[in-house]
Image (cartoon, rainbow, N blue to C red; front, side):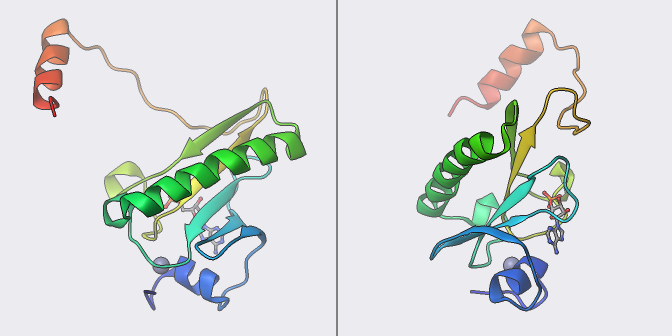
Length: 136
Ligand code: AMP
Ligand code: ZN
């Protein structure tokens, strides 16, 4: 399934050019056009899924196994010092393109890429209360 208004569907359709570094029957991996670091790439499923909530467990497993494999290959090829794997879902998380994707971000000592969050204080009671709420 494709979405006519989706920029990543247009890329996987070949309607919009991309620099592809890996492709198989399910995924296309392209270089990000607004890279956080040298080699920043995106794993795109060829079919349209808005976010992880729409992705089947099977596709999720395949996408993250591919992320691991590419992280290893890219680390060797680029001689990077570390690696961030980032995946945003919904506007609140920072997602801007609503076609599931995994960011592969090679990291270099002293690079200026920013992947992080503000650290907050939390009490023991608050932690216990959250754990209770999340007791699956
Ligand atoms: P997110 O904020 O997680 O939705 O990430 C969307 C990413 O897509 C950003 O890092 C953008 O730089 C990237 N992006 C948007 N349009 C294109 C494009 N045409 N080709 C490659 N990367 C793109
Ligand atoms: Zn799409």
